[in-house]
Length: 512
Image (tube, rainbow, N blue to C red; front, side, top):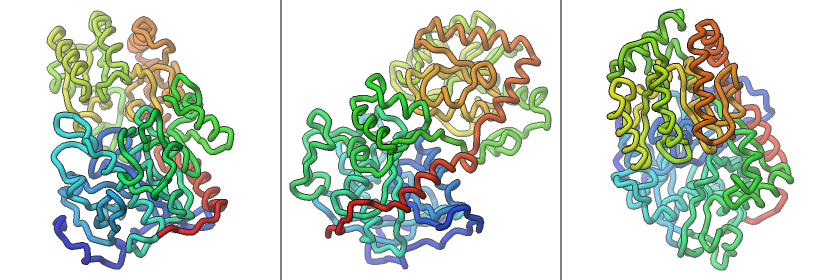
């Protein structure tokens, strides 16, 4: 696949649209709507965490009913992905926000991805939010303000596209200014904003309306926290509807303990019936017998499939070969995920005959602590700092139990992936883990965020492992529990349909 160089001039504009994908004809809704899905990650091209997975899977599931286009920044990884990038539009400079081209990638399955092509902001060595040393880019406010600005211009039909949006669906703080720009500029298109993790709010100090291209004289106090502009708060204030990624988390964030200072706004949204919790699904590729990332599976999972992948993990992580259970951590290595709690109980797991494999990257102190743990228990604990999709999936497939003692968890995807591959999650009773794990049936839950409570749940799992019929029954129940996105989109359909039907009750003129 050829890639168009980033130096193609702005004037080389096509008719404004990639070829429309071939889509199923069946549509249970009266109208086929145009949805612009705005995100900072898309797993096919660039992924940091679960947002990338959701952003790749949910738009695809929605394609059967709607024409969904994804909008992402043109990071180096995107521009160098190998896909052809057609120039289909352009957006003019506004305030400190530079002008940019709008490219389009059509993926092999027909999914269309609009790319904000702005080399000076996005084409850098490093990661979407940080440099190679893990330090946040100092101009992130500008980089992601541009993303929201471009979304607004597409919705306002000012991006030279032969396509317009009936609804804009923005995701997490990097896309948070899209609803605000649309409000400020009088764009009469409904907006949905999804909170994937309320803790990350995109706050920036020392910037004003000129820095983010807001109209002169805009009252920024409504989108500020302690004097700093919050991209996430801007979305909460101005979006037509707020969703988050599980029912339990939607309730938790309206309370001070997990509301991160934004609970009064969220309480108001909930009272207005404008806050909805929708549990994430998983992508169609998570099929244990056909997943190309996995070794070929024999027909019988219990006697052959898990065994094949367990042997792979023993070789990959230099584990002793025995009949003890394999526990797994597949996670960002951060405080939120309770990695310190897993370290605290690891000696007990080893003493009980268990083995532990860990893959992920994150906080340097936790990475070092895990490597020290591996050195203390060679042959029983294996650690891989970093991540790749194939090994991640093989760990789920070969392990007996997934350790997930999160301090909070908006939804979580790892437990869904693990269940689909017959790996039983051991998780704290919080957020989406409550909604997706049936204690004692598809996994194990515990309450207090303490090593002692966590260890009791691990001991329950060890007891099940010694009872083969019980273990087999739980595995099969777990494998049938997670839903694919195609089975999980009905709540989004309802939100979209209501907003598009209602429109925006505030009549506006689109500002120039």
